[in-house]
Length: 139
Image 1 (cartoon, rainbow, N blue to C red):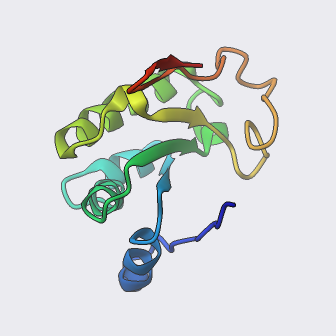
Image 2: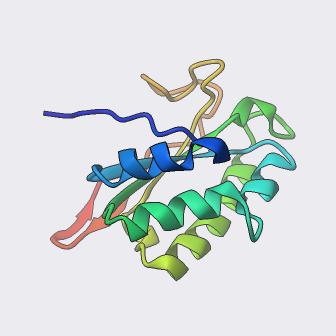
C-alpha cells in the first residue's frame, strides 16, 4: 500500500516536515520554475536545497522532482527552462548523495493540471523519463 504524507514546505513548519519525511520511502521534491522563484529555492540557503538535503539525510532513498509552474516560464511551458532547472537540481542532488540518473524529473503545472494525471498537450517535447536502477535502465 501507499501512504501519502504532505510535508509542509514553509520554514515555520520544518519540524512537521522532518517528521513526515523521516517516515518516507520516496520523496517528491516540488521546484518552482518561475523566474526568480527557482533561483531563490536553489540559492545557498534556499528551501529546495534544504528539503533535498533533509530528505537524503533522513534516509529517503528515492526522489522524484516535480518542476512546477511551467505555465509561468518565459515563454510558457519552456523546454529550455525545464532543462536548465533539471541540470542545476541534478548537480546539487549529486553533491548530497543522490544519483541524478535514478531521479525522475517531471515538468508540471499544478494550477492547470498539466502532466499531473495525463500527458500535457502544452509540453509535447516531454516524452517521459528514463531512470537508472541497480538492475539496469528502466523506462
